[in-house]
Image (tube, rainbow, N blue to C red; front, side, top):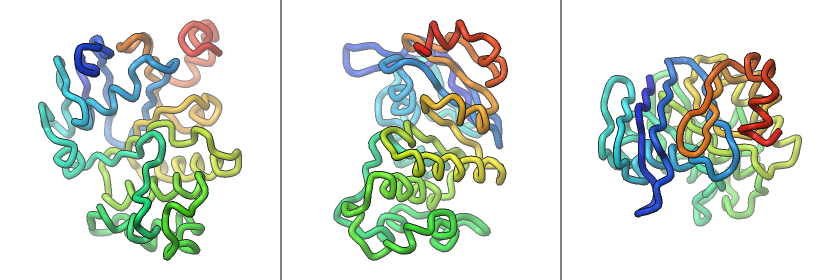
Length: 230
């Protein structure tokens, strides 16, 4: 479904990516993991079209994205849960959910999102800026699902959340995997990801340094020490 090959780019004259290459098959859950500042979020912004690539290719469902705008990438079926939540503060919870929604037969709609996150239904008429951080994260995940994405990308979706809220987000992601959703996740919680991810990609200095299954990473603690600081 997704194939990133030799991707380079960064911020103006500051180069961050030095040949990022990874892929995800349909129904697979993959991760990008690594220390802060290694290029994980820059990779997501580049493949989403928010930053220009200076080299390499990104193919999504057989189509080369090239210099596609973020709106085009989203319409092709990529849903993003960005780092830092970023709800539409002037809109209610329900207005956030429907603002960018795209209908699909048998897909995600308001009732399915409310069933997944009952708190959002309770607060559907509230301004989204009045929600707690965890509730805002649920809202942003629900907003992405309302676009009925073929690929769901989550950038640090559990960072800074209370333990119970983190558990609810992980529960949600495991349920999505069970339904065959293709997911790319960036997170630091290796124990939770071991229950979810099919394949890890360790990112170091703008390129993939290692890839393998969670069990393979667990069997090589020196990798976690060298690349993740664990």
